[in-house]
Image 1 (cartoon, rainbow, N blue to C red):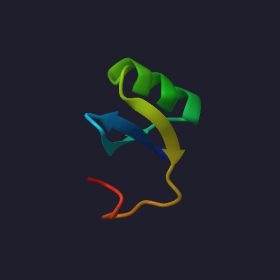
Image 2 (image 1 turned 90 degrees about the vertical axis):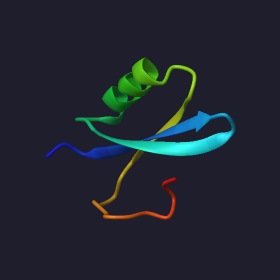
Image 3 (image 1 turned 120 degrees about the vertical axis):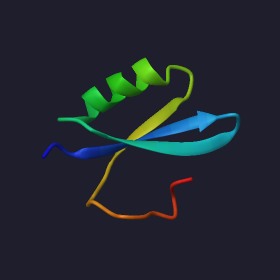
Length: 57
């Protein structure tokens, strides 16, 4: 299973995340720039799968 990354997005002053599966961070960045060109702020590798997170909105 490929690693999971959170795309950090800023929309109308709010920070949100979208989780994606890619082989590496560079591919996750490419997807983020393609899908969210004016919103992407960062990409973070997830440590382990979780069912819920207080950081997600």
